[in-house]
Length: 160
Image 1 (cartoon, one colour):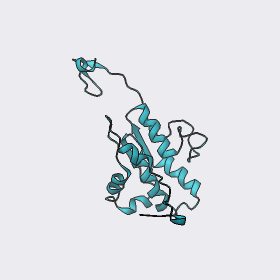
Image 2 (tube, rainbow, N blue to C red):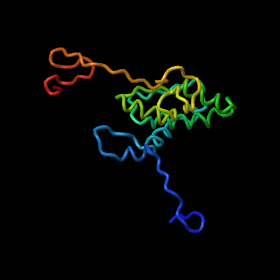
Image 3 (cartoon, rainbow, N blue to C red):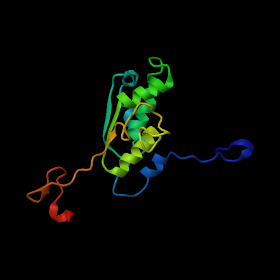
Image 4 (spheres, rainbow, N blue to C red):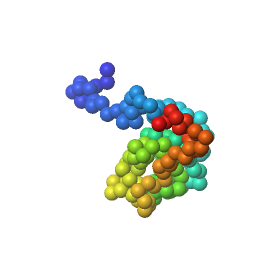
């Protein structure tokens, strides 16, 4: 058993995205450990390229973008030594996400930008002039044709 000062166990500080990934729901969240195992399969040089761009086409918790940002922060340190300039560059020019619901867009922004909005007071990125940043969610209404939605394929009869 790990112990801290005076034999007292250190405080448990779980990654909130690990906790969310373990919840039972209709949405499946990727645990940070799995996201990192997948990112480990990519060439390390990719995270030293300031022109590389990353898209998460199904953002839910923002875990992939968050973990990519961590790798880019380390990988671009020599090329962009000023940390705030580096963070601004990474979030503005390299990371993009498409959220699947409004709630997951908010969750993703919170985990990636550390703020409810990309241009919020507490956002780690100082360059966005809009609340969505590069994590977008656009509500699309179903458009029914022959009993199916043209956008998502949902069955109109089952949907109602």
